[in-house]
Image (cartoon, rainbow, N blue to C red; front, side, top):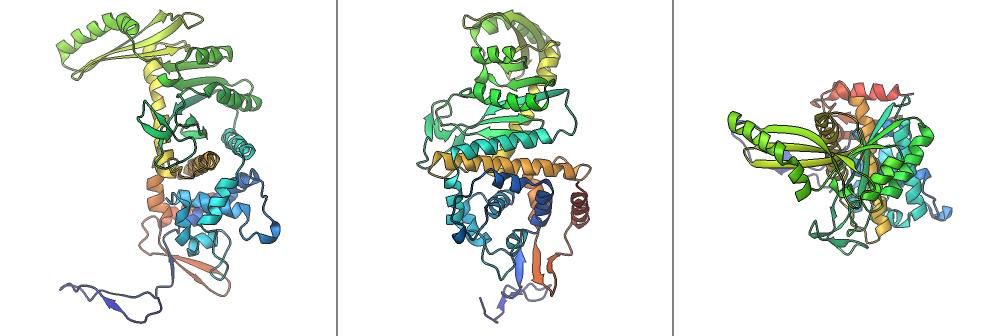
Length: 439
């Protein structure tokens, strides 16, 4: 808007008149992308993703290189922009253009149609290559050979609101949805796999876990592997597979009358203690249990809990040789952290924004969101001993990445002028120096 006129707001008695115009120059709210781009370059993340995708376009008509398309889409997710439509105005943002190697006089970044074509161009073979890359990057994060790896497996509902392929109705969730399965470890999402909405939680878990185990044991042949999962994965053939592959596990069981009967004595003991003390009481024990569909008798860990709200029976099947309360409290309940990771994957990296029509395009979207989560997980290693050591992606984005800058060019440099009142400017400089020191 080339208008020299100044516009006036209300006037407070204790301050000067409030005026505004549109002559501030090139401003951006994405200043923290400078840190992300520097870190991304050091770890080679975007380059590795783009290497998994074959560029079948005619070289004579290419304006946006594959790596630039991947970076643009990945950085959009990390900055809180969930959909390709956001590229309509981000394609001219001076910070976005600068971190993708363009100046203000260069052509704009990729628009929504270009990014949409990228999402719909990815093949099944390339999706597999991207999953392999996710797994290998996770294995690379171990600087030394681990003695033990604890895997968390969970499924999550991904509601759909259009006519996406294979977005089917799931009776348990009472909605049309996709049903991804997520493999995690130690706060990181190893990889995610998109499934049609009607699939059971355990559908496909054995071949997917076998695929993951091949990569783990190729890298770390002697590592001990443990696994945690909820009752959606309590199926006999999964127990058999884990035991045949020497994987210790703790998997929740759906409560039934037979299990409650075996826990009845401990519920009564907990009830008497609750009546005396008026405080929540918890007792743990284990027993051998057999089901017709099981190939052998297995150990079940039981929790008998009585509180003001009533009684609570909980059961796990486990092959871990330890005390019942240790298996339940110190091992199994830690999978709650994995559930929080999935929530952050969806809320912080928009893994629930699967709004393309084609199933494979939505699969690619899910993988991109997972890559965004992984990049932030690795970036968090820079935040140890800072106020953001345990912060969520949303909090880090708000305070470190969504930062206002004025962008202007001198004869030899492109300057990013941050506001003088930027609260975390010392931390910003400190992080930059740490990133530069990465070997």
